[in-house]
Length: 297
Image (cartoon, rainbow, N blue to C red; front, side, top):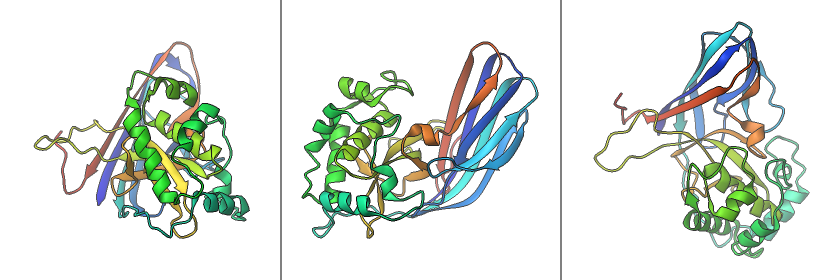
């Protein structure tokens, strides 16, 4: 499947901002099953951009500096991606969770994708006993890794309510867990908490998912949004396997990985500092358009 992706972030400031420096993680990374064909970035009314090093996580980072006063700032990225990723199929000879935990602890891989980097708690995803106990019901150490992972993702999807008004971007996992409500970020963080508590390498994936409208209805431009899900390392044969607890499905050809990290703080699409007074309002619009299904403006 080939997708055209348009991601627009608009800032409206309550007063003129004299200076802004932002980290942009809007260019999708190279990841198994997907290829970035083209990418463009534009900033209006303007700013200086340069490549920056990813200090944590797996991300393409662009540094944006705006040093002229602005009241409005629009950041637009456009990507064309080819995605060809099969749905995983659990097998009887898959490594068990106990084997995965042991292999991750013994890993000598020093790359950013090493499973050893994702075993431990992180600032936004601390250990929590109540979440660990909840997830443990699906994480028998003798169970196959793929089978256990999808079972947990599907249970979270069944037992939690998607509610965009229930949490904020900085809501801790234990609060969303207590209310059994939240959004994709909350469900991913809850699942990662449980997996890491069991000694398993689990990463936070940020990206996009194709929105499929009801039969007979057109796609709505801007109806899509950034999405979050879980990557579970399942041994050398399978590598990192994507699990989407918001939808109870595998990561497959409808998912596009933008960045991977220990938690959201490492791979937020836009972060940084501004010098100015007054409040600000941020609006994000994402459109993921399959090329064989043109969008209607």
